Amino acid sequence: MHEYDLEINPAKRNINYWRDVWKFRELFYFFAWRDLLVRYKQTFIGVAWSVLRPFLTMVVFTGIFHYVAKLPDTGVPYILLVGAAMLPWQFFANAFTDASNSLVSNSSMLTKVYFPRIIIPISSVMVSVVDFLISLGLLFLIMVFYQFVPGIKIISIVFFFLLGLIIALGAGLYVSALNAKYRDFKFVVPFIVQFGLFISPVGFSSNVIPQEWKLFYSLNPMVGVIDGFRWAILGEQNIIYMPAIIISVCAAALLLIWGIIFFRRTERKFADFI
Image (cartoon, rainbow, N blue to C red):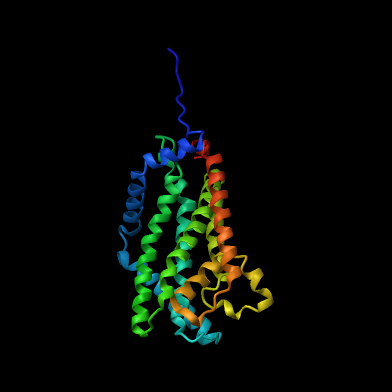
């Protein structure tokens, strides 16, 4: 008797691959719902953790940067200044981290059945959307407490949210493929997130950055996203720096294209890496 090895590979042509993604679209819902249940299963406070974590971070950052460092509040309660920045940053940090580790977390599935592997990191990013919406509700409650009413610019938050989502997804796709090949990248991801928090204007306004350094500082693509959220939620008190927005849009497009290309090139070898 002869033994045969069956090798199942993703479609070589991109058009066929994306047709497969649409064909397996129900897996998006399955993976996202499963990850959501796992995240809060056997936790002491359950979903409330999504509220407690950003709230405590807002309080700590407000105390450090406003009351200790004496940074200005730009005309609004400082906790709102921090909260408007914490929304996009927390979403990016969660989405990027989950997407980066998604392939390794689902390694048992990669060697058994075929489906477009890109579904896994994308669905993990979708789970972070739920946390974002919960945190957004928390921020609205704080705004009610301080009797702060946002202006019509609040509708532009959708654009900046999508911008942050694309940045997180593009970077997550790239690092998830690297993480499947080189396992030590799982130690790099927390460092990237922690370092990014320090160099992003989460606990302070970008207005404190000297004018001659603003363009260089804006090379961090999350600067434009965070500034955009503050501008959309807090209004005229925060002047938007357009070069930062342009850089964020360009970085989002490049990261997404680069992430998809690298992911597709590496996808055929995931089963060997895992």
